[in-house]
Image (cartoon, rainbow, N blue to C red):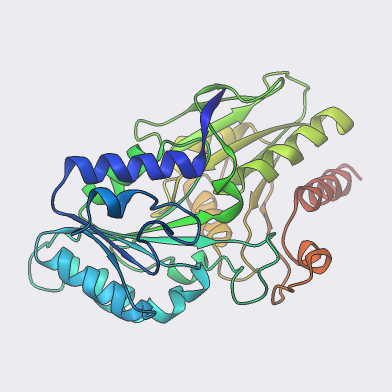
Length: 340
């Protein structure tokens, strides 16, 4: 069911709770001080309550993460806000060679309590350098955890897990999700409901329970609304039942909680907003093939955005970035092809 708050409000409230509970926690980023509170208002109110621990920085992403690494290395906890995810390329060196490696390269395990928040995604008309989803470029880095913002997952729980893991984490926040309503387990709408299916509350399963006969599975991270819109269309127009499993943690990828869903599905699709090639979807496909080779009746199909820069013109942007209609079209093509 809907909470009374938007996802951005839930995330902001989670940050306020963390700051109230932990005097070791710092937040760094560009324009994060009040009254601005960051480009998407996620940090609103924090600097007023904790002026010594919320630090507005120069425009230097590599330096911002470098300072945060220093805080984490000295036993503090740090959250970094990168204004737009595209700029994560500017701090890649610090994340790859300092944040992640510091956990184990000093001869003993060293907890790095660091979260780098990354607003990502398009459909906002921001153009080619402010609209990308760069998750795939950080997959496979040892000791680096990747998670994704979702309206199904409570952000206080997610941030607690990231800061408490002892490993640096990146939190990819699709900008469209900010304005969506947060959900609690139970009814999503008049058709779908959801529940968590693992002890860590990482995997959420959304289903209709209508038992139409043919069951397909969509695996997604932050594209909850597009995945559910596609599932709804396929059910109502094609009588194809689609279950959707949503991961909060992208990497390391835990396949075990969804193996039963995979075994029941005639087809499995992984939906993500990145461009094709070396993606999270590729990681999911490989892990499922390794973990349950006898349960996959067919190969996993990847659905992503086009292999293109993202145009600024809104009508062209929608042709490049994966939409719910693209998911519907691909599923229909696969079902028809396999039935022929």
